[in-house]
Length: 486
Ligand SMILES: Cc1cc2nc3c(=O)[nH]c(=O)nc-3n(C[C@H](O)[C@H](O)[C@H](O)COP(=O)(O)OP(=O)(O)OC[C@H]3O[C@@H](n4cnc5c(N)ncnc54)[C@H](O)[C@@H]3O)c2cc1C
Image (cartoon, rainbow, N blue to C red; front, side):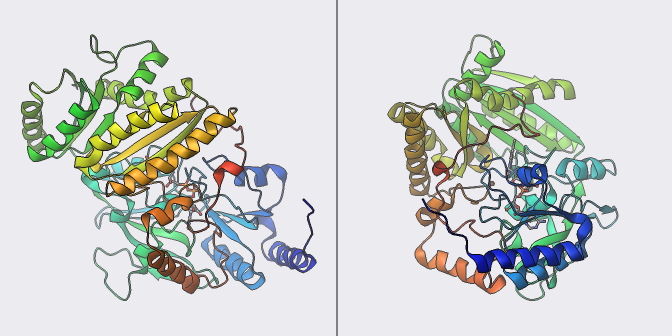
């Protein structure tokens, strides 16, 4: 294919770069290493930016956006780059705005509000507030690496969201800059705020397409006094998922309720060479945590154990923190161990109504037979949010084709079951082709109209959510990310 260079646009880019380098010389990077790192997130497709800008003050964000808007340059905001969907990569080049150094933390222990920079790592905030007897519950599995700015921009979830809600439920206020560089403050560090249209909630989950967040006010709650963890084995997925529904009917309110299907447990058992439940190899598993005051936990535990009587094949209760940690290890090992089946994992974070989860699992088992690829599934069954994986070897074109067809079928099934194509990862690039399965043309048109109103020149994270992007046409990059433990 013959490439032609648009000279006007090249000149414009050069002028924009010169203006940027003149205004903010110390924070502009164009070296190969910086650009390569910023070209990737956990989807592992690489799109190089022209420039990486590592801001160390909020005002610099306004300066960058004013210039980008003037010259029409794309700007992709970035936290830790752990996005699972390609939402943090600059598919149209331009400037990557790295916000990871905006990492101030202020905790108002009396008002129970934390005010943080978007670059604060989630687990670091959690440790800081827990040291003061407080609690910030949203706990994405990537919490040791991902940033709160990324969490807000993706409305991140996690295991504890069952009892405590997702990131959105903790955001009181957002400060930042609009696409044209004007500052905004939607919400304040206050518990109540209903002034004007709620653009704060519009920004949450907008994946960096509507504005850049430079400060976040987060609600904190008291740290639960006690936790109790247990694991239960079931003969089948249907039995485990029936118990999920039954537990709620019995009035049990777990903080965490995780499900593992037999394919996932089989992966972990093969990988570690250990059977999770003696005599019940490859059973389906529920991992449950209760928390609250000692009385609450005692009452809930009794209710739960009464319900499980005669339903679970076996159980293990953790009496100490280290015993609980061993139980969680099973869940963590499942994720890593899947790479013993194949080198590529498509991780789909779908949600279906609680009572439809068993049907979804029946479908994933049928899909496994149909496409001849493993479909191990685990996840947040208390929320109906299951991570369905399709495993394939990327060297095999035939398998990649089957995986691609499998994902499309899976998404259609999820929508048919009354579910949603993503519950926590967001749309980014990977889910963009399925937006029209989930939303009507009129809905998508309205979303695009909002985007056009807030970012008329379309400079903020262009290409995400709405452009049907074919991930399959791009090569994966073999690179070790900080969260890889294989
Ligand atoms: C091992 C692993 C486990 C994971 N587990 C979970 C999980 O349990 N739950 C879950 O929800 N997700 C999970 N994820 C996905 C990912 O970690 C989350 O989406 C996380 O919120 C992204 O944060 P980040 O700092 O890495 O953001 P990035 O990946 O850098 O960016 C994500 C999006 O946010 C935008 N953005 C970032 N900062 C800002 C800002 N300041 N202003 C405006 N936009 C911004 C970016 O443009 C991009 O669209 C997991 C990922 C990995 C690799």
